[in-house]
Length: 163
Image 1 (cartoon, helix red, strand yellow):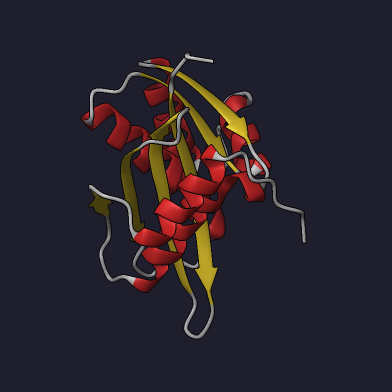
Image 2 (cartoon, rainbow, N blue to C red):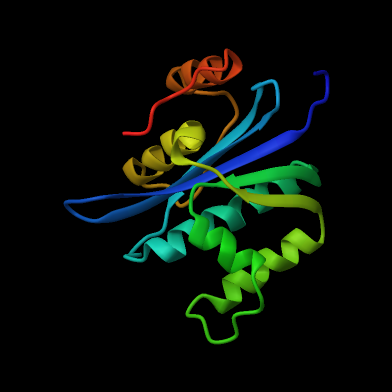
């Protein structure tokens, strides 16, 4: 298959003691070639719902900044994908952010899908990195070695059993 498209994978993460919520994602193509990575955390946030929505928003903004307007976005949070793809949620605590995401999606040719967490390992790596850093938002022009290994596994078609 010679067809190539751009893929955005996003994820949120939470670590205890003290509780910190981070997020991260990766932009790659279908041949698992790395285009960009990003990570960050939301200062003072104790809301995983916000974290999972915010990473989708930040990933869409990064793709827009990179002039990528046609891609597929994967999140391992079915709840968040459903919130965004569903009808307008006027009284939701994060209604403004959800509407901002819907607006970004309407400006581009982006498909938003749910994926299993096993298919989201690169984004999970960056989300955990976001928890451990003090930066609100960082981009990573080249992949860390651990991500290279994950991309290599993806390219070889390695399957992972659910734990």
